[in-house]
Amino acid sequence: MSEPFAFGRDDATDGRPSRVPSATRSFWVLTVLTMGFGETASDFLVGVAPAPGLVLITVAVAGAMLALRIRGPRVAWVYWAATLAVSVAGATGAGVLRRSLGLSDSLLSAELAVVLGVVLLIWRRSEGTVAAGQVSTVRRELYFWGAGLATVALGTVVADWTAVALQLGYVDSGIAFAALLLLPVITRRALGLDPVVAFWCAYVLARPLGASLSDWIALPTGRGGLGSGDGPVALIELVVVGLLVARLRRCGIGGVVATR
Image (cartoon, rainbow, N blue to C red; front, side):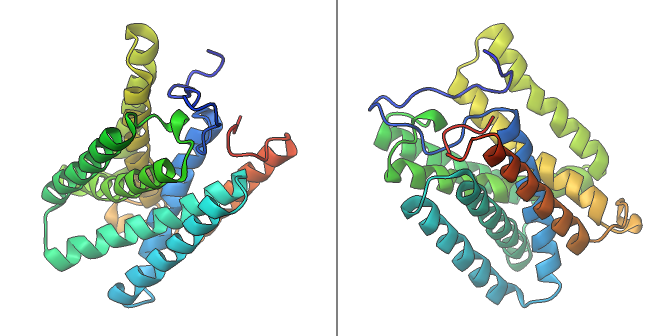
C-alpha cells in the first residue's frame, strides 16, 4: 500500500469507478480543511444573518452544489466545492439546532451519532456495502453525501463539547482528535482492521479535528483562541483548498477517482 491513508479504496463491483476520491493524504488534508472552513464560515455568517434564513440559504447552496456534483462533470473541483457547501450547511444547521432546542453538546452529539448510524445502516441494507470505493451510482452517492452531512454536524458539536464542556480547550482537543485519527491507520496496518470501518472511523474523526483547529485559530483569546477572526480564517482556508485542488489538476488529476 503506497499511501498509509489509502484504505477503503475498493473497486466497485459493477466495474464502474467510484464517484468518491481515493482516501489518500490529499483527501484527508482537504477533508480537514473543508470542515474547518465550514466551521468558521458558519460562525461568521451567523453573526451577519438571521439563523432560520441562514439555514435555508446554506442548505439551498449545498443542494445546488450537490446537483452539480451528481449531474455535472465528475472532476475534483466540483467534488470539493460540494464538500465546502455541505460543510457550511452542516455546521450551520448543527449550531441552529443546538440553540433552538437548548440541548447540551453531549446529548446532541449522541443524537447526531445515532442519525449517522441510521444513515449508514439504511445505506448498507439498500446497497450491501458502505464502502466509499464502491460509490459508483447516483443512489450510493446520495447516501454518501447524507452520511457526510451527518459527520459534519456531529463534528461541529463534538469539537465544542470536548473544548468547552470537557474543558480541554480547542488546541488540546485538536491534538487529541489528530492522535485518534491515526488509530484507524495503525489498526488497519497492524491488526487488519476492515478498510471500510477504518475509512468511516477516520472520516468521522477528521470533522472535529478540522473544527477544533479552526476554532482555536479564529476565536477570541478570551475564549481560548488566537483571535484571528472567523471571516479571515475562513477566507484563508478557502484559498488553501483552492490551491490544493488546483495542484491536483496541474498534476493531471482532474477526475474524482484519484486525488493523489
